[in-house]
Length: 336
Ligand code: ADP
Ligand code: MG
Image (cartoon, rainbow, N blue to C red; front, side, top):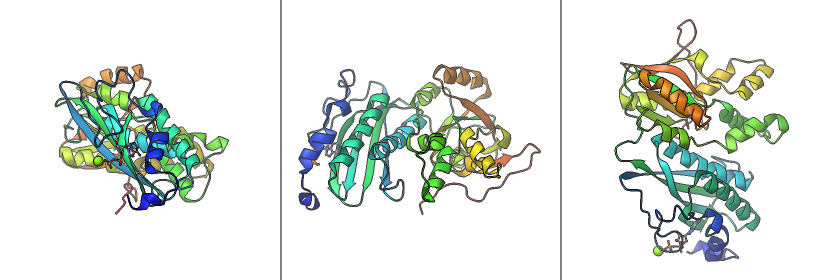
């Protein structure tokens, strides 16, 4: 409580005004699962009968994960999206989230926009805010999401089996390209960079696809560090090898265009292989289930593409049309 007393508006007023508000609360249907939200020492959750609680937390730090002067509503959207993506990767249904904020100063316009960005996501993904914390310090946002998953049915990184096919949702590389443009001081809010802007600030957590894959996929992960790096997590934890086919990898159209204009079309593929932040799902499943996956994905309007297969052995290799291995320098983003 020491630092916060220096803020011109009290911590409690801030919470009341920007976080304990109607648009962020559980709706009538959700309130049976959340008997107590913001306002007490703890929130209370009652996950549906026969489910397990899935928990995940992620911190976004200004200057590391986003630019400090970025639109606060977009920062909020992205912060919640990357957390929801972890629930999607487990096949879990969102229940609720908590939010720990550190703020350098009280800027009500910033908080208003941030709170509105959260509200949009809360409504879209039906994941209400049930508690949190505010303190003074360098701008950072920590969200913890809670979801529910049918007992024993979570999609883990451990279940891939030799013979499985590998699928990825959506398209890859756009968020990575957006990040490198931002790092180099370029703007994304121009009409020709709309897709890049959206890929970076508004990733679509694949909750519906994750739910559809429960009982179908053998292993799943969301792509936060890059396709190769995240594929390696599945390979290692499942003790299998993976062969990816370069020509099947869905490089985002906006990335292809950008790289072609730069005179370097092959760079699109290496971005798709190594750049993080796309938050698409990477799945493995038995070949017999592939048609069912395509049907389910079509039903929820999500594109899924088969990009490789699981083998016995270890390691992840990406092969070109001639069967030669493609090597890339960086295999994904690492903080340390
Ligand atoms: P305590 O001191 O018991 O941790 P606080 O006084 O910090 O509680 O917070 C009061 C209530 O407001 C708690 O229910 C807490 O979860 C909630 N809260 C605090 N900060 C936030 C926030 N940023 N977003 C949502 N709820 C918050
Ligand atoms: Mg307390």
